[in-house]
Length: 100
Length: 71
Image 1 (spheres, each protein chain N blue to C red):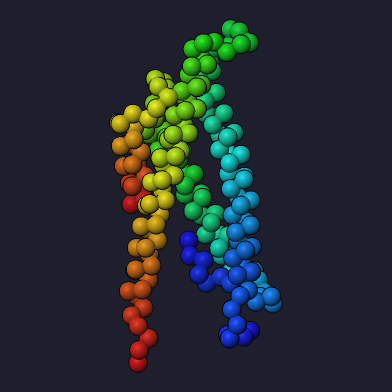
Image 2: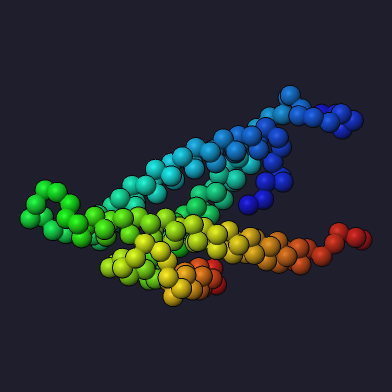
């Protein structure tokens, strides 16, 4: 994301928006994790308590999802950067110098 | 605005259009990211959860999935 066209005041404003968004995204991540692991692991309602099997499944699910998220965030960051560079290069090519 | 002095100009105004554009770009990027997360999870991670770590196959699958999504 290119913020070089924004002035300082705008940049500060956008930074605040990013922070708020990160907070919201974190909550979404947490609730998504809970729902996903519940749907995949907890299907035995013969008792109110979690069975050992369900508990192990939930622990593995949580571990796995968090590690998965770390890895994919990394890859996404790399790919997105590459993509932005390609876009910038393509845009620069379409506007070859302003020299008369 | 003076070009001779550095530092933040106290009278900088916020152009709402610039901010809106930056915000929109942010939305698009995070939405794309969310889609990648959901799709690649469904495709690469089986729901049996045999262990808490990502095994090699899943790791490779994740890398390829993300790359293909961008293509």
